[in-house]
Image (cartoon, rainbow, N blue to C red):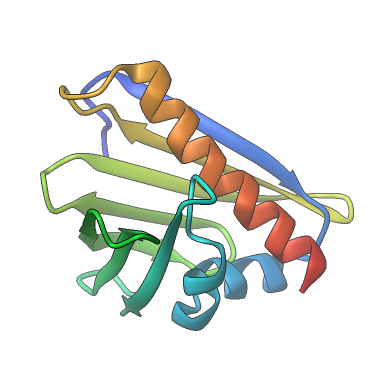
Length: 141
């Protein structure tokens, strides 16, 4: 397990779906393009995902009006199916994602190292917004 050394921010959601479905939708590039947005004005037009330790991912995140965008990318350091994903973002920050079965639901928790540009509350709100979109997507697909 990676050590998260910077100021850690935690977001989570209880998803009313089975763990296999949650895992699949969280990691499938086609599904990622449907839910990976923290605000209605943004979207993820493309996603690449090689889900294995040493594998990489890249999600292109853009404003729908084309005014700005960026690649959210990194390298996986640990993957345990239906339980754990750890990765390092291209800027060096570490992220840990855990999947915990709770009855008929899954508690999905993301812990990530804060960056130094935006306020932590803004970062938390953005990551929580994306996770909330994922919850809605997973429960309706």
